[in-house]
Length: 51
Image (cartoon, rainbow, N blue to C red; front, top):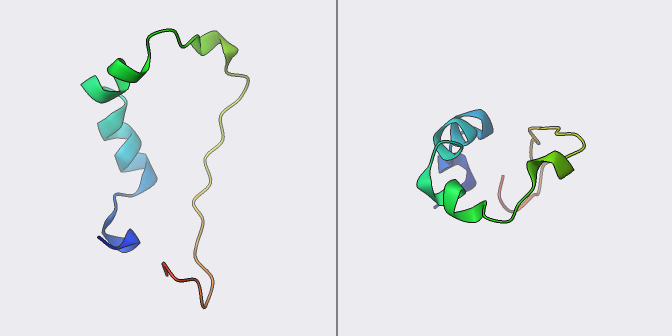
């Protein structure tokens, strides 16, 4: 698989957030410990092996 074949991060989040996989990862995790959330889509630079 190539990085270009992956979903856009927003599409990935929309698919993952309601998933049973995330639910299985959550036991014992206290979401009130989250201070802030940022997302940043990075563009590969010339010569980057995944670009």
